[in-house]
Length: 380
Image 1 (cartoon, one colour):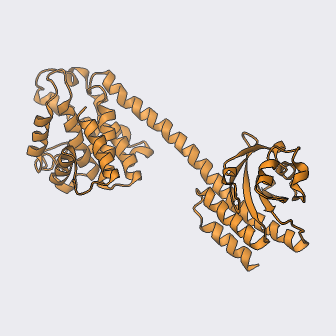
Image 2: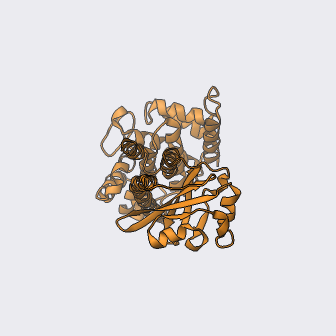
Image 3: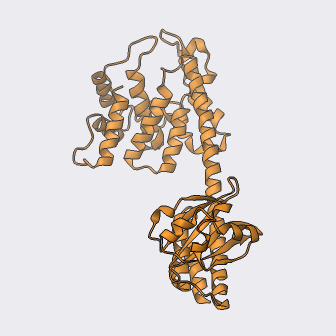
């Protein structure tokens, strides 16, 4: 009985998203404890009503993994239909009946047994057992197979559920981000931002954060914050935003409210709460002379400090209604001159080094690919 407890423990320790790893543990255990040649798992897809080979142990022909079968193309179909263990003592006799048999015979198998993986009266898959030397199962052997199947289906069901939730979450995230992108695009339609500004600064911020070592979760929030960094300008009248000449003190005061407007617009949206630092604080300055809260130094959130450099760089390099974009050398000089005043000096230094080709001592392929990406973006 202990061996089945061990199987349950091993299956429980596998990452639920790692279906291949789960199947490997289950089939390796089956091969070892049932004294068979090979085992695999067919996962049933209720949408397509087909079986997908999720992997196995003991096969010479590794191309079997990932193959897809209709229920009537494999003897496993009887297991699916009857919800019972079936045994095929002589696979060769079924060669003309099922398309799949020829591949199994080609792998040297002579005997086949299939056990349904059923939970809550629903079939999740099939545990297939193969032998090259034949099997004459005893009642104890069949009981052992059933126990292995019972342990396997619990882990399989959890894995399939987690993967389904991940797919749904991915679709929801993609749909949500598409909405955010449309919000950002609406600013460009008002000619508030240079064409493509929001997407450029978003991609470069994400790449810079990756190089700096931030997690993928953090980078997701950075991307959203960068994309929506100027959404607060929706609340500023066009005659001020599009004014070609110098702003009056009152007009400047109104313009400087856009980070607060952005915070008020975005903060009720739960998914955006971790992304608020960039829209809210990207106009703060290292010396404390920024807005809206006059934060200084490290009191400015790191996301806003990173983004603030990239936002200014792209703005300087872009053509605006009242001026042409600056040449690269002039924009570089500005970033360098404003380090320790407008920008975090350490981040500004790293940014400029990346523009200059990065740290040559770190010439690994990943760093090189990041450097090339950034140079392409910055020099466009």
